[in-house]
Image 1 (cartoon, rainbow, N blue to C red):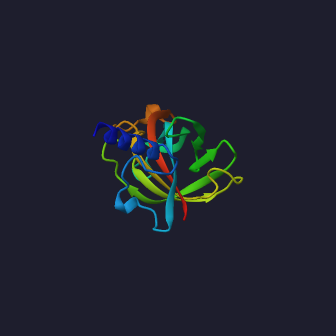
Image 2 (cartoon, helix red, strand yellow):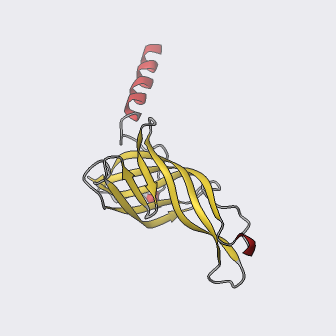
Image 3 (cartoon, rainbow, N blue to C red):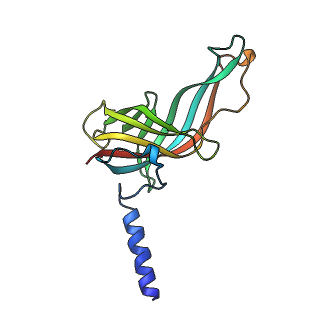
Length: 174
């Protein structure tokens, strides 16, 4: 019996180490990609969400932390460096392939963190690791949101860099 249990653990572990073989966090139904999409790769983003203290557009004399851009490194689930994530939003691999995303669906994170998202992706770089990606699901977010208190006139223009992590499930047509 011990041998069978050990074998099952070994097999499950081996399958989960394969790129694209799993998603680390269950994807809520509203974020699930279309049925013709298949999970290609899970990429872990670690970095910051950048905010600037700006006047609120709808409230004279009040200020808020306005989102500017993400800045993160991208690694596979074993920790190998793959590329970077930055304004656009853009995901760029070391091989020069990159995609730009457009938010389709937002889903509140279950903790105090930036929302989970489903984004349509389009290739804007060379052929490579990310060039076939058509959908990105940002999930399992931690951190990344500014303090709950708004900023003020004295902080106008101040930049705030808030640490975050997220899994990016990358899907391709399949």
